Amino acid sequence: MEAIEVTGLRKTYGGQDAVAGIDLVVARGEIFSLLGPNGAGKTTTVEILEGHRRRTAGDVRVLGEDPGTAGSAWRTRIGIVLQDADDAADLTVREMVRHIGGFYPEPRTADEVIELVGLSAKRNSKIRTLSGGQRRRVDVALGIVGRPELLFLDEPTTGFDPEARRQFWDLIRTLAADGTTIVLTTHYLDEAEALADRLAVVSAGRIVAEGTPTTLGGRGAAEARVSWTENGAVRVEQVADPSDLIRHLVASGADLSTLTITRPTLEDTYLNLIGATR
Ligand code: ATP
Image 1 (tube, rainbow, N blue to C red):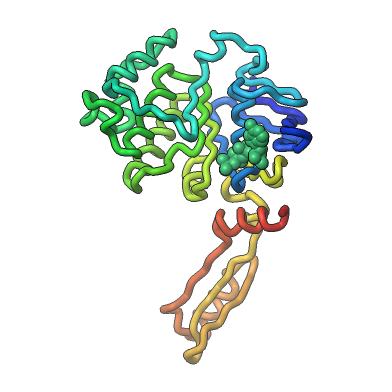
Image 2 (cartoon, rainbow, N blue to C red):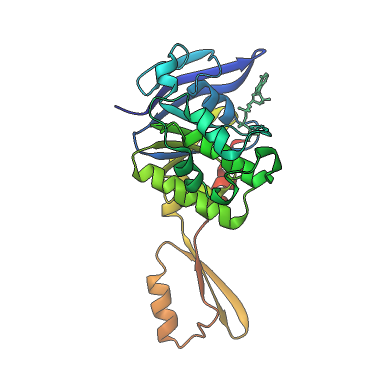
């Protein structure tokens, strides 16, 4: 069974389509990333999948149930890290994690979760005294304490320092290796590239491209850009396979000290896709 199956999903606000017909399948155990500009319809889509928003039309199955009607047992199988969770609570990190864990049938222990999100040194600090990035880690801790089968992460690393982001990525990989399905919404393309098995780009309420980080939008088939210096001038050639060109340059004794071979980054591909659909 798939973790998520969506067909023809639509959501309108005041006659305007926020989601204009999305089809989506996320396999169990997959890390699936949704990309797209502000207002594209990502959060609306994800909130419908979480059962937090009603859809206008379409068929939605999440862990085999319709989130619009699923009950509390279904809810305990899902973990959610919202975009702007406000948890400036007077509780300590440990108290809060333990409290939320109490709502689930088989929670992870508070200490295990706190360790997983790298907050052990702050376990007895009140949440309101934490920095923004540390509070975000608490949000992640609360999302995973219930041992979810499916975890929704909406821009989870906003405000994280680079080291914390890397630690978070490791945590996500650990959870995925454990069999957790993960739906990740992010504006950080390096994050999507590092984590996602598959990704979809949403623009104006529709999926405009879907694939793996290496194949998305024809990226895998894109030409390589080869650049080197010849007689003091920079030369550039675009070729599908640079092998022959490199052999030729070596044979001709060209100066290869400045040689670079590049292909479009995920960001290049993404910006092209978005530009083409606006
Ligand atoms: P971001 O990257 O900024 O989080 P997003 O892709 O998550 O954007 P959504 O929040 O899903 O975008 O919004 C999609 C569209 O739906 C936007 O045009 C937004 O203004 C509109 N919208 C979202 N929620 C509501 C609402 N409650 N009432 C009316 N319009 C809404």
